[in-house]
Length: 477
Image (cartoon, rainbow, N blue to C red; front, side, top):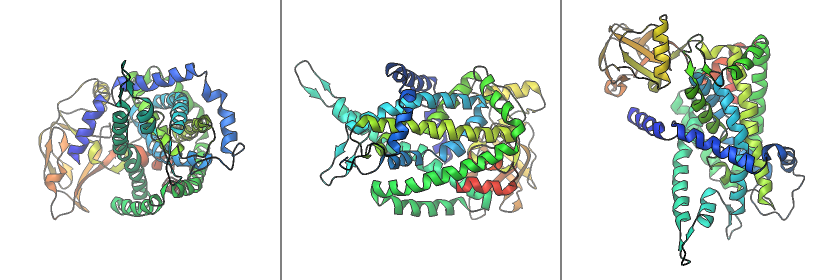
């Protein structure tokens, strides 16, 4: 898994994590917004009326209603983007990252409008009456090249096939795996249930739903998505209400640092504008999928006489998912104050790094230097060798343990329930847990550090009059 993680990080540096991707995504949204005359505002009210079924006709062709298509598309983002995505954005880029998530959502409403309209227009109606659609279909039909001699070069089929293949891969990285990871992490944090067990149960339940096709998926999501969203929002409002004195300062921090980057506070070491901007836009896409091309596949099956009507319905997705629910989650994290607090936790392997040299959080220069490292502005020498551990305590000198972009404190190394003693191999800052595997129980690092994703949101929900019971809201939601 370490090799896979390193490979994905390598790709991310040139794709989603690179500046060109952010400007392309936002630029596309700006173009459609201006060219079409602010459709996300002009058609918003009409979109709500369409979802209510006011314009439905009995002879409309399709497999799902407008509402079912909307909830099916939302099912891939509500949960992952709201529970884990916002927490990760704020963890990496600070409160200002939420501002850029909102900007991405506002522009993404238009992008969704366009991609869904086109996908619905060029969908295929199969002999059995079922519907197939998505970007790969309009690419195949409308993105071919015609030469001067009238010869058609089927470039659209190649692009469509490539998109379909990329979407399958993306469905693991931005769809099923993050969803399952968020759920399993919440279940482990709240109930202590093993991650593997949670994943296995979810796989069986999902299989039973998926085997029934789009109609069964739509039926299930139209019931579960509104229910889980309602439970989650009510719980979030209770947390915000409990910490009401921090609401205005939290809102202020989102907007005041939007163009300067987020300042260091608590265990958070700060983030420059470029890094905050990049992470906010990336998490915005992760939250609402506007421009990713996956949502149009679900919307293509909707019953609609005019494709543009389904495009209007899609406008509501980024609004519900990001502008409403993600903003509420952001206020939960900020008002509770948990986002910059160090929490006792078991360290995640992907977030653990051993740096060559001794750096202190109390030293302002070291804090600034480490913040630049986390923002990819500079690099530090990574430790390679063996960590010496005695009774769970790392005794090696000249190293600094980093976890989740923060200085790790009170680090304890355990094997099972016993404190570990012995060497631990490290290569280029990465602890080689695989070399410690065998018949014995796995080795874990634990301590106090920042946390992120689902674990951070789960912790934030404890900061209300509900106490520890609040964490179960996240697990249910």
